[in-house]
Length: 405
Image 1 (cartoon, one colour):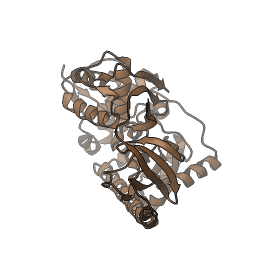
Image 2: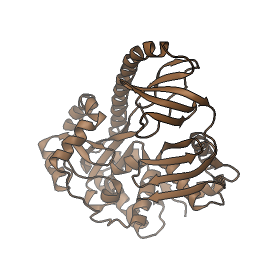
Image 3: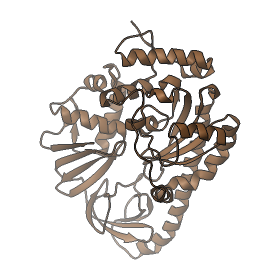
């Protein structure tokens, strides 16, 4: 039997009771291991399968204790999201209040740090533990427009029984990620939720558009900071000879001497300190701190040298990384969830996998080779000398270690 994914626009426009019945039937079929004419959308189905493998209770989910108030305040103070709260409020809160929705902002761990809405809807959220300090990561709360967005790293609508946990079937939620333009890190999720009868097809596009405005404000603040750093760097570089560049703390170049400007962000060592490192694509270089960033003086241009060992850290998904150890020292490459999954599959198959085999492993569809090849091309550029092709695999001479959560 061919399974047709459900159309999300049709769901939100459908009578809430009817939509609930349709989605409940799809969910029951999947949880019971049965095939049906209708199936979940790709991101919902992938989330359900992750949670079934993890053994999450589909009726009640899991629950962690609330963060203490002082920990909430600490996370708020350290989060760049605090600087874009006015943009989020202006774009969402008025509309959400009129629609009887609540607006929430969670950090990259799924901890709910801010929420706003009418008293009546907030009380309904209280009944489900939807309060500041609660944990809405996917392993605990199931398929939601917070936890699933953190894993998928794209906007997601979760409507009625698309929630893996039955306790949340009376809600409709739309969430979108906010990414730090300085380093590509996921900062958190903006989420708009409300009772099932308040669903509207425009909610997800609205949330997505407002988060893009928030990211644009973060980008403008970053460009302003680079201009200030450039004023500091110019006289400093004027006293030097050779090849050197001044970057901000995230590796974005502000000024350069003796070489063409680097294209894009330089990958600095995690927890960098003054010393000698190998830095893609400059080569071996000395790092010295300057106000607002780093002075990088190239001592030995070239490649990273032979790579001996790679450690893939999957313990804090969706924040994954690969630490590469080689003749020129060690360096860290942060990984997207998709790249982390690819490295995990290749580590489990040291003999290698073809594009079709990887597509089958990742998507259950061996024909999706174009997507696999594109992702592997990006990954190989990020990890030079680590991966080979035909088949895709880790180089034979490299020791590979994977740390799972």
